[in-house]
Image 1 (cartoon, helix red, strand yellow):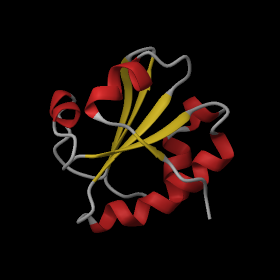
Image 2 (tube, helix red, strand yellow):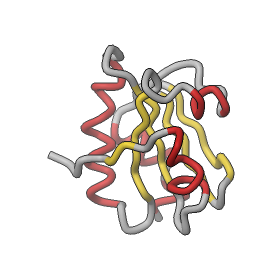
Image 3 (cartoon, one colour):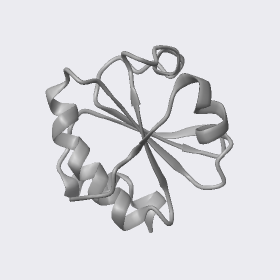
Image 4 (cartoon, one colour):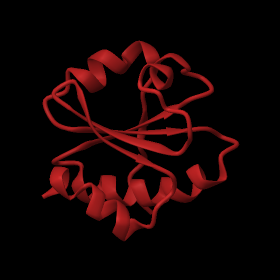
Length: 109
């Protein structure tokens, strides 16, 4: 089992994500979302392997509507990577571990 990912809220987003010294991956998810539950253990595994290079966080879109709206997150799961306060990559939909690793290679290498 992978590392438990910390949650981030609308209120903490600027400080925790946009002002971070290293890239931050945010998994936008909801309790009722089946594909979100599929991708969660994969992200936890990746967090365990790559947390030295990238911070892994998750945001519940039902509890935190402001940030997903600001970044036009319309479908979940959406995995966004932020670098130096900017959205650097957006991955929409559940993907297998190999595909996610490939998408995130720029940030984990």
